[in-house]
Length: 329
Image (tube, rainbow, N blue to C red; front, side):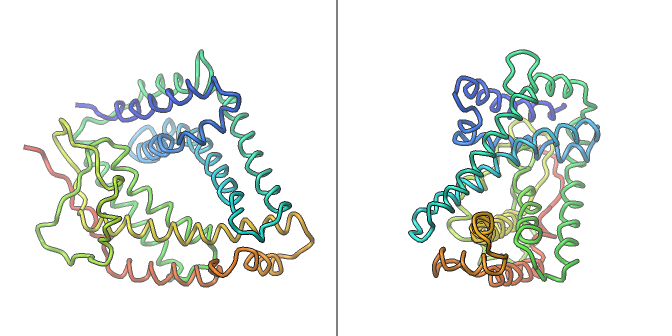
């Protein structure tokens, strides 16, 4: 049985439904942003990223580039739009808010241009039609071979993540290139089970590994994102250790809080530099003043991320995440 094409088709159909509605809007990009087009794009990008390592590298790499351009642009809209809504901070003046709002509008316009240029919204010979035709010609693996390849892919990805953090000896110097980049790498491991539509399932280890109790918060354990799609008619599964996956989810969540806090300060600093003659140190100092006492300084955020990661990776929950492949009786 071959299952790969159906996974892409599931999310391509979701995306097509959004595009069908977006094309009727005065501002398609804004409508897509407000209606969570980013989620199916994440799933499709994750699939393309994984399959580019399994087979047909050129085909799936090209697809990943198209999807990433859309997803990244939606991410840029979200970044500026979120910070532009800092009106709760009474000290954020109109000039700064206008700059941030202008950046958001610029990214929205950029996405509208991409949608037209790359024919995502076209009613004839659209980008999605082209993708579907390319997928029809891919050299898909049968189920057993594919799941075993996904198992290898997961283990390789985990090895690369541990090498990434150990290379710096858990010393972080930049929110974007250290904290945000690590979170991106970890997050893909949590996106793949959703994107693959059932061939990955959670299971408790029979070896009774140390339980990562501190990570098993009510919020994490009950998160809908940690409920995987049902296995359905799968004949072979890749199993991930349940509690270790929850620990991964906790790390992604906590690094996200640190990342968001840091990028908020960076955005206000950027706005200050673009609308005044302040240099970077002075702009950061002013940004902290404007954001108030709840804003944590960047060095402290980096230190917090270092401490979290050092403990998490020393506990080796990530290295023991993958339990392996199991045939379904």
